[in-house]
Structures are given as C-alpha cells and as structure tokens.
Amino acid sequence: MKIRIMGTQEECEQARRYYSQFLNSDMVSHCSISRLYPNRNSVNQYRIYIDISSNFDFMNTSSANAAKAYNAAAKALLNASAKAYDSAAKAVLNVKEGAL
Image (cartoon, rainbow, N blue to C red; front, side):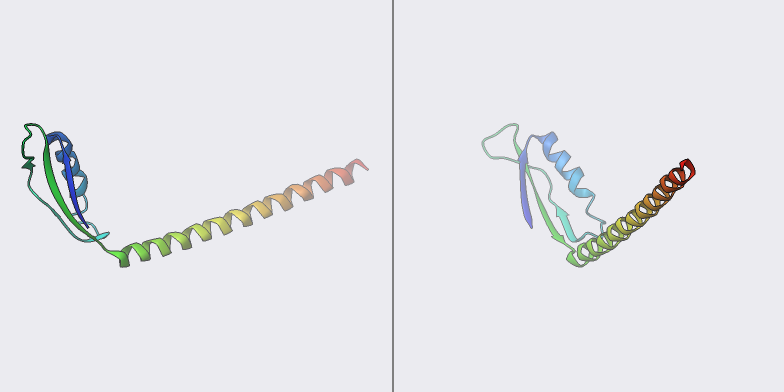
C-alpha cells in the first residue's frame, strides 16, 4: 500500500512514529517512510509518504493459531462448566436425599 498522510508537522511526526513500529515487524514484508515535505501554498501543512506491504503468511498463521487457541480455551471453559454443573447437581441431590 502507498499511503499519503497530510497534516500539521506534529500530526505527520505522530504518523511517522506510528508507522515506524512496523519497520522491524514480522507482520509486514516491507515498510518505508519518507521525509517530511511541506505542502505547496501552505505554511503549516505537511505530508509524508508510507510504503508498506503486509506479510500475509504471518497474518494467516497468526490468525489460525489464534483461532486454535480460542477454540481450545472455549472447550476447556465448557468442560469446566459442565464439571461444575455436575458437581452442583450432585450436591443438590445429596441435600435432597439427606432431607428425606
């Protein structure tokens, strides 16, 4: 993707800091950030250019791993809930039997 960001000098510097985190990230295969350019006919508006390419293999692997982890956690939670329900039901039956 090629992104042009326009704003005040501070806004452009904030965008530069944000996109800089991707320079050494596994999530992107390429990231470059241009220098600050002043906009024509403006004294306080600037622009920077970002060129970034996603690493879809990393994203797909991460998404698949996240889905597996979510499913495992959900299954564990359901099992724990079922065991807790069974224990509570047995306790209620024991109390009823003791009361009779």
